[in-house]
Image 1: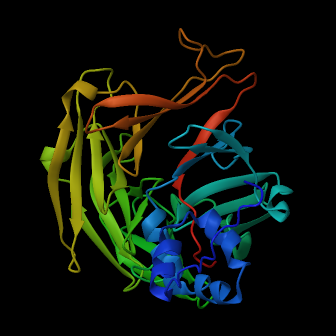
Image 2: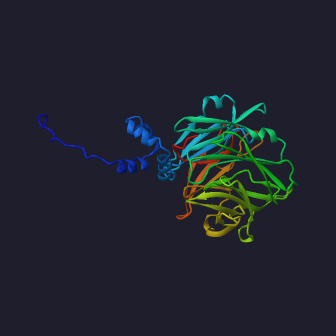
Image 3: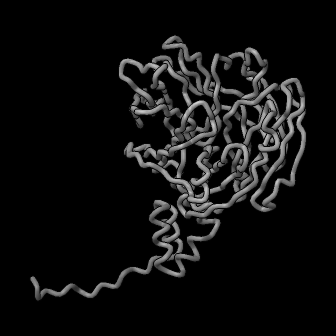
Length: 380
């Protein structure tokens, strides 16, 4: 066998179109390694068109949850990042760029097309916004406009990419008093690299929910009415391209004690439930926003046998992600299993569940944020 010779074989000439399709479906980490093997590949794999195709093919694959943990009571205090694989449940302790980590405190605002948005600060003296792609290790910084509105009743950020475009924008919404009927906003874009776009929107809401969803270049919030006993009443949207607000009442058929917005597949959903033990089911409504200031709320499905004793957080891909937290310490008690943090994913079609993260902490650590994340080549 040692004397046997392999026949001469000429490898087939793979056309550019076939190579493009192969790389578009390739895991982004593998594509990063392939870029340095060939100058032609480097040129093709660095194009904006490839970044869009590759993210579209892989956004539902190898999805991770980035979990921010920190010490109470501050919300903006993520002292630790955990990256949890949605399929294998493997956990990795994450890191942030060194010039951010030395600040000591950072908050995960969100993730869009492979880019993570962080707010970092050291007390109230110095703070900023970081736009960071952990795959390419590229980072840009922006000023923290919320420093000007520390005492405001509403002061929120939202980040997202403009629909069918590689450009992204950061919108900051604020108003000083609950009784004001106007919401002020300012916009940062990666092209202008400045907060040079401002405006005002007349609204009936007294405050906005702390979380948001960005879908097809439109930001969605839950609008609340009432201060002493706040009630979710509206869905508020802001179009990053046209810079226009819209407002719509949540219909009575969808109103419950708890509401949150999320993305599933290629549309926005409203998750509503009473969250009182196993009393009620979870209701999922599809929210459709047209170019005109109009919405429709259409019930997608109801999970009567899957009512949860804790608050549903969001969809990651096709799975519903929930979290339950029991703080431990001198004046706190855990449940029967002594669970400090339990994050689970639920298959709404098969009505099955499994735990992604189960941690028992020896110190007081609180859940600060959960963010779905998929790698991508989008530039910061």
